[in-house]
Length: 536
Image (cartoon, rainbow, N blue to C red):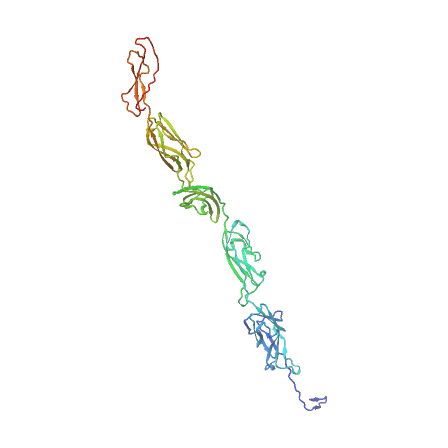
């Protein structure tokens, strides 16, 4: 050291040595430019369980201190979670600027570990030096202690749901609400309340109020504005994000069909409809008494238990039909009237009865044995036809009441036309045969019971046995004046017999008297001749 006074004199001290001892400066570290630090103090890193995780530039720089300390080595220390924690398969560490760790495969979701981050160099603490620092350079001139939070993440799963299917409405419907259209909404382990719904429509011009859905109630709401078909896509989103390949949205598509204002349809179906089974067609079967508007299409929707028709062609309110073979029974048939998308249905009861059969009945006897009458006489057989009824299995017209008729092959047997009486309430008829006294022999007859469906033929025979009649005398002299002087035998008439030959035979009266001849005596008497021919 030298000293100079005011007169210029100079003095000096003995020589000495000044020695400066080094003091260690704390290391420094800075977070990476892509490392997010929440609240300026916390870096949170999420990773999937069982998956090795490495963040190469979690720190942007690590230094031992000033440049003169560049030869020192620096370690990043993580203090807090025990290294032996079952949360990790490989515990976290920082090598250079890279952070790496591996959660255990069975680590619970959303579990976390918190660490305090510090840097330590190997410069020591001699002479008051500092070898450790927990203050990180956060960028933008900010520095603060840094915490590392490691969280177990899961892959997010998007909400799931179904839709109620196609929706139909009319322009005139006003505000439309379809309850429960959004169905079976699920959000995995996440709360359902975080799910939001959006609706996209390919043609917004069809709606005065665009479609929307409620996750809470499932209701679809919209207000139609024009006719058409809209494709509607519903998207549900949760708040789980798409980290680690997760998904947070799902969608479904359906259609909303909006019809124009429907016309007023009127269909008055004819019911009941009664048909009789037959092989031919019913060319003009009236199935409706009123169909409006004109031009609407009337069709057969179906019949229960089955359709009785083999073919059917409908024009306006009338159908040409043929029936199925053996169709029989009662059918409920539904008719459908349509105009565009508008439709109305009505039901008719159609009764099909089987093919009607001819009447039935029988004769009390198929052969009558009679005796020739002495004079013309009418023989009556009561209840000759019995048990007459209409045939089964058919639908009969109003004029189908059975009625009996009679025909015989020999009119000479009768002095009047034989006949059958009208059927009584029990289906019986009496036979009247006006027999001619001169007839004996056999007659073939046929009784017929006829209705509008057919006839029943009942043949029978009539046998008339001859009756042996007594001889007859035709008195030719009803008044005879005689005298006793005349011959005692007087011819009074001709003799006839139905069984013996009496040709030339005459009836005579023989007078025998004991009155003397010439006596004046007048006698008046009536004589009734009795003729004996053979045994008659």
